[in-house]
Image (cartoon, rainbow, N blue to C red; front, side, top):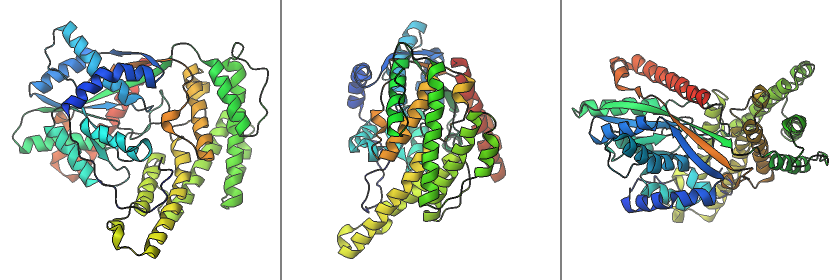
Length: 468
């Protein structure tokens, strides 16, 4: 994600939201053309939009504050949500006779790291569209204060991805971060202190991508490219017309096994890491998918440990938690608090700082390999052998290969085929109803956040099941 950052720099600056209504109006006008130009999406439809239209009516009447908690499988998700708000909600509101004022929009929370790999212009655009950044992996008080203020006092409702990052899989959710629930309770607290009576709601939103036509030809071609890159023989008998999941699935498994072998040898030989070979040997008499899963889990742990040992971090928590802590540790070595005034540093201090930044960036590379696979199970395709699941898994392997080669760009992922998007609005979940438990005492507050996060996870997973 932060590839190319090899010099020590001053601390990352907070990018304050500077909402510009003219830019929003322009973005709404250009959005359909942008979708056609920049994505493979040909259709976006939504269920239960009338729920959202009515929520906007209540918001504009000063009765509620709410946050859209959306699934985040792909980088195109914000564009789809923009289309939902700017095009579909006003249309349904007119059809249903729900009176709302345009523009329909949402303040949103985004990862402060995005402008580092997507370009500074993305940070500028997000700011003027009313977005506020958060640094993942630490208590970013500037970002939290901004998000908290927008939730309680912003011109629009809020939107955020409680998974914290994309996982590449439409039908598997990563564990939700507790920050969304905490923001909701803070909003309820701020409203109570101000003597305001609005109810606070979190609205789960599901997103599901599917192909208009099964792109087996493109998948077969991508598999061939990955086989060539990993030193496997390319199957010349495959072609676009004859490729099927039955013929491609063994190739996918073989590719996964080959990549695992290469990476295991890499870490054992050059980083002197030990992998649980005895456990793998026992599993090899069983299902290949289970073997791949076990090997992947062991490899992910080893890769993260290499980075954690360098940054002096303990290997605790879920995969996402470990990745976020490592990301922040790396940023602390690159974006230095003691480098605020670069002109005051001697050439030797600058050179040593650059050396540290370069090493930190290289250590973070191991974490970047892992973060693409945090939600991967060994049986995702086998359990439900659809073209969507097959394509998603193949693309994750492609991301791994590109990261190894040092040229992965999330915005230039290959488009395997035309896609349509299904957005599902879930029933709002009330924060206000749980606020008495939250404010009772510290233990009650912690439990309320945990319980709400678990309930939100179940609600969002239920939307995935409906879309399936």
